[in-house]
Amino acid sequence: MGKIILRLDRVMADRKMSLNELSEKVGVTNVNLSKIKTGKISAIRFSTLEAICDTLNCQPGDILEYDPNAVGLKDLTI
Image 1 (tube, rainbow, N blue to C red):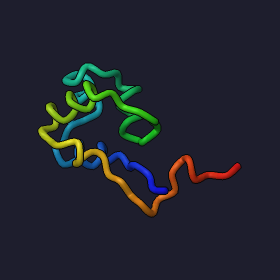
Image 2 (cartoon, rainbow, N blue to C red):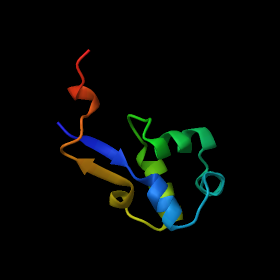
Image 3 (tube, rainbow, N blue to C red):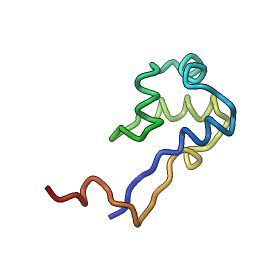
């Protein structure tokens, strides 16, 4: 099973926008945006995704990418 990869860092770099600036414009804390940026989340609200896309002038597919060959959380065996 694959994995969803977050590319927020790439889109922010393309738009030359800092985490602080995005946080102010979107209305989400730096801590939560940092978690999104580093992929340390298991869910994202559509309202947050919409605000990020509106601010960065992008599509959800620019931020979210599915890699069918990556190891997802469900694939890990402990």
